[in-house]
Length: 468
Image (cartoon, rainbow, N blue to C red; front, side, top):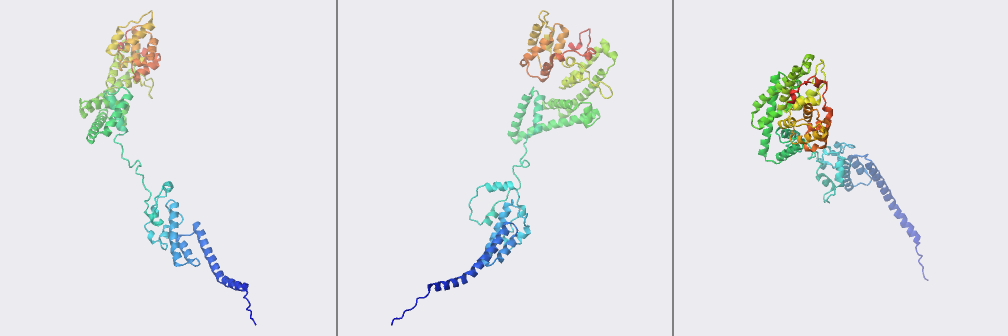
């Protein structure tokens, strides 16, 4: 009789194995979820910046299922996070954590060389560094970060580090003045060109030549200092008090004369200072005499011989100013018409034409042309224009159109002053560009006519001595 073995129930075996597997897997899954939860919380708190490196490492070590290997890995991760945060904040950790916490954290003894406090927090520089391409490195991130050079604390091209140019504004001004003083220029563009050439020579010259130029400038300074000392001694005044007798611009003009006399070898610095300080004192006294004439009484203003005497004195004073290159200074005094606080005249109050007659003597060739010219009564305008055309051949920077016109009108009533100044304006290029003469042409006839102070000075019935 055959025996049949009953087959085992397959579902029973599956259920048995499933139950056994679940019994083994459920505890592991619980452990996994617990570990995952601890690490997720650690990550969230770390991203929020709530943990210091020491706290981060302590939480990591206390996470469920941590091993020595994972603790070591978390230690490296904590260091990398701190470095990234430092660079992200511009290299200034400590805004959230104190440096002491970092240095005292576990596994951070090898970071003692990191001087966080010395890393400049220059966001702009960090931005530039981040935009720069970097070369791949085989170093760890920590070592690579520590090996990078720190940001420069000073810009080497900062103005305070750049050597100053040996040619400065003071030398430039001296060169321009030198061009005028020594007759090398008659206008500013020429003086500017001379100064530019001197600058080029100075900057490109050998050191010995520079020393020579510096020595010459030193002599000029010596002359200035000696002049100031001599002037203060002669006036018995010091510093700014000397300006009450001799204005500052006039002092500068006289100093230029003194420097030029030394530069041309005519005088030593001491001789120049003595000579020109005496000249300056003479100008101060002469201006005092001119002020007396300006404030003379009515008797002196009316008598013809008193007028002539005053006119001659003013002419002599004008020559002294011209010798010092200060002709416009005295010309301005002659035209000044205002009272001081005590009611005294501070100038002569003459018309520009009257002041020009005194200040600007006619040069010999111009004087001869005036003497030998006869203006036609039939066509005075054309005859005056012909005279003006001939004048262009003889005019010099020392002449004055106003003075010439005034003398011509007194000599010949047919002289047409309107035609004279019209021709000058129409043919300005023929007499060159001289600032003072240009101003006389611009104002023209309006400055030509005499005023009542002219009448009180110039003789009415006889030829003025100022007209030669």
